[in-house]
Length: 382
Image (tube, rainbow, N blue to C red; front, side):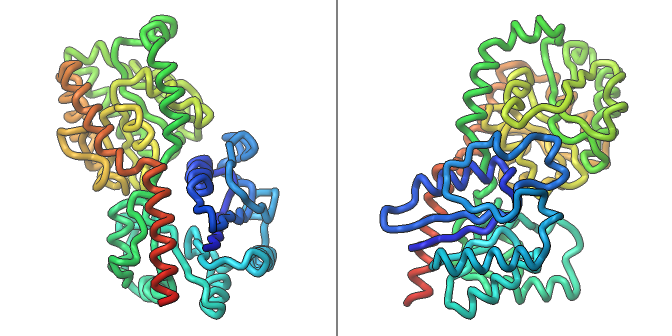
């Protein structure tokens, strides 16, 4: 079996981890190749170069610049050339929005090559009606299998016409557990010393992300201000903000808020080690991989109901809470409940996070994907 994966950017470090694991598990009589369209996207360039990320898998890079500078003609030419040269039995596309992928899809259909779609979209992404949905239904019918980020994305492709037997996995929202746990463990061992050195309060909520409108920082800041003014135990709590962006000025001068600046992805676990719980208040997230990161570290989570991960990763009162991102008082009340718990209760919630994140283990997911490739190829040849 020969599998060729088409992906948009080399920079994506969590996809690099998954591709590396897929390459490690590649059966002895099979071959695996990833074709990356471009090195990065402009919005990621400030976060570091793709060369700083480990790519332990065979790949070809079509364009060394940012994705938006790669023309449609060059994409199509490069992808078709790679398919002809590699001669795959299965082509795994990382989406269906790029017209170049439509050409590849038609080419594979004509050549009898099995098609797999990696899908991150769900019903939460926006309005789901009209002509666009009919077009998507047609596109979905062209694929033989689906790799889904979570249960919500799996339900979405099923609604668009996929069959349950075509679902390879619904746990593909993976993170680089080895790096996260290594950095977290080292930092946690120095947690109290670091808190004292930096003059931090005994307890911390943490937000990790870009400081931009869609992350809904004003609601978080107002909820935290209410908490500090109305909950006596909140004097022992601060809010760590890890990230940078256009709303930076809003977080720099609020009482009890510590802005830690933007950080490389592999340093984030060191800041999670200082925290007692993660808060993700976004108006919308297709998934919210920072929730996975926190849960791999054994943290409880407070997550906006508009994040795609909530159905899979948040059990109310067990490992955290969900909330309406437009209701600051609801968030404040949940933060207050969390502050009023004791350390043992918060530790139990963190342990439940570890249980819930287990199905998203990267080794386990890669195994499911390879089994799925084999299953759809066998079905196509029967």
